[in-house]
Image (cartoon, rainbow, N blue to C red; front, side, top):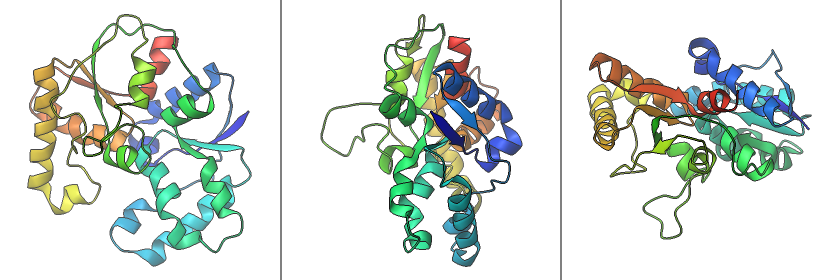
Length: 247
């Protein structure tokens, strides 16, 4: 199986180790990973600020670059959701797009739903708290939402819970927004920071040592608050934890 690896802008520029960890995890499960170097931003920041004419060529370029791959995998629920749920505005008339978007996956859902990874073997002896990002949770259904009646589930948790030595902490508000929201953090800085601090406090009270999630953008926001307050908690993308555990 060959996948096209899509790496979000902020991972490429600020957290390249997350991209490398994603490659390590996929290759561990026998996947051939290809990284098309001509890839650029998916266009989400432009779309969120209403710049439709700037978003359309980026969406078209994404489609042209990745359409030939059997699967496209991205270590970000936010960027994956942009392609799967918001590209229709730009590519609905593009022949083959409806089929293409069914082949675009966030990393944990690819591992769980496509590769059918169960009972992952590895060690990570730490108290870990999971942050479930809004886009992944409510648009990709990577976990259950508290406002919807039904069985509780989390694809990230299903991968982590079998690691030897790990202890997953229990939050009071398991699916609350961190306050980042991309451009929201710029336009509404004070509200964004208060929401982020609420998330940090919930993890702190639960005893979280390592705070993880599917989106480095949300984790970046929380990490800034943690470091400024000099709290004894560190941030790791779930790909980093999995790569370290199975090494």
